[in-house]
Image (cartoon, rainbow, N blue to C red; front, side, top):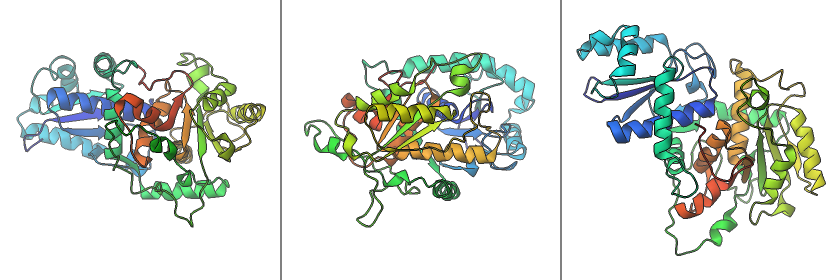
Length: 380
């Protein structure tokens, strides 16, 4: 900011899930870069108590970011110090900044533009709807937002080395195979029309063991990962989704083009209710699918005993679930869940080979399939 750069600060809401935080953050980043020439984006993690490694470190305790992150009140205060140095001292009072935030900062050329997800609900929601309408994908036009967000995520976000080590310990202790050794659906690439304008994805995350296994690696063959969101998403006072039964996820799996069912030995389900694992097992068996179903959800987890975003063990479990969902050959979930929408985009980071043209929807969003609707989207 002191060198003349205009800054965009996104202050996350601790009541919001991680998928929503990152999807919305990058959606705002793209918008303000294109329409307000703000190329420096900062994630303000100062005041949120969820998904924290410690009092000093928030999301950066689990993820590596290629953009600045504020973790502590001391780092936050540096912003006010810089405001004084650029003759913006009248904004160093928090309340004055809020007043200017709602009324002026999108039209005036202020050095800092700040979005507070929770404390500025009117401004945040109005601006989010505006951006959503600008970039939405309705199935009839090019999937611009999926293309841009998935690329932006892969350029800027990865699981850090410590979290990856924790993931491998969690999987080993639960006797769950590492889905990094899943065989990708390269047969789709082999039969892809040579006349399409293919591009190659060279943004594979180097910190994850997602490269194709060598001849000595324990290849798992093709794998499937399900994400079945229940809990407050379905049963809460303000439920955001209707109930999708386990058999619907299996039916969606059976609809995947050219899926080699006879070769699939390992399935995984990430869910916030243990009973889902029982229903999914029954549904798989009824359709003669004999893959071994793996899961990490404890047997006492139900709609009245949800995971705790303030708990570090639950947070590590969440990132382990996300790892498995992104590394599987096929992902089946719901796109109306921000986790499902984020996973589809994050899977690009671990995808080998050609990604095809936009007309084929990036091989159906990197082999991600929604039970709720066919096309990827971000909830309004």
